[in-house]
Amino acid sequence: MRVFVTGATGFIGSAVVKELIDAGHQVTGLARSEASAQKLVAAGARVHHGSIEDVECLRRGAAVADGAIHTAFYHEITHMGVGTRLRVFLGGSPSGIVSRFLSAAVGTDRRALETMGRALAGPDRPLVAAFGTMAMTPGRLALEDDAYDNNSVGAARGASEDAMRELASLGIRTSVIRLPPIVHGEGDGGFAPRLFQIAKKKRESAYVGDGRNRWPAVHRLDVARLFRLALEKGPAGATYHGVAEEGVPFRDIAGVIGRHLNVPVVSKTPAQAAKQFSFLGLFVPVDNPTSSKLTQERLGWRPTQTGLLSDLNGADYFKA
Image (cartoon, rainbow, N blue to C red; front, top):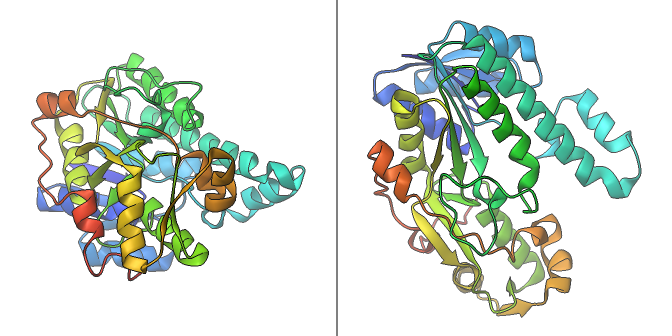
């Protein structure tokens, strides 16, 4: 299958590209820089120059493919085009920068999905896209058939899930893969390293309350295989959970980081969380248990890689 991949040189996307190529698929990756293009060539993929803000570029990339996988998302403002950055910074009061950034990121994401989905029109040209488990109802075990919760901390990306459902209603073979807040493995640049950096700066590793709130987790190699299986076998409108561990107590995560840094592991109140964790303070207290039982049954997917705490305990994990 000829597969168009966005976010193809990112932490998750690069693992997806390798998984696809190893399985015999022909991959073309979206690259917004020459450095990214060189990485794709080295991985054995073809290069499609452009960005997820350029809808015509996305249309052309998807139009000549048999299917697409969308892992790109603006997690940092530096990833955005100059014009979008200026609108985020100058579009209102400084206190609204975070909300404007999120609105721009989600809007870009939805337009990208709609563009690629229409270019892939037809039941035999799949579109698989990543979302987050933090959009589910907190404190309740999330199942694949559950809808996202409009009141959750991750609800903003629900607009993209809605776009995928609309495409499925048109007969396009869409698959939603909800990912946990920590996708771990070599080269991790996500929440785990950021928590480590915060603890290093504050000279303490913190959790909120009693720290019993649970975060699901998965290794990036396991989730890369899930993306491939969804691409190959997922029916239109499918939703999967890329989760290997239903919920690791956050206090245990903080404990591993504290041991690595040899700093105290301490509790913070919800009011202190924003000061301690900055924007991550919204997510750190969330109880986000998530099941992948139906995903495993429906796709025959079985996570086999090391678990989160074992991975974090590795001597080299936080060297970056």
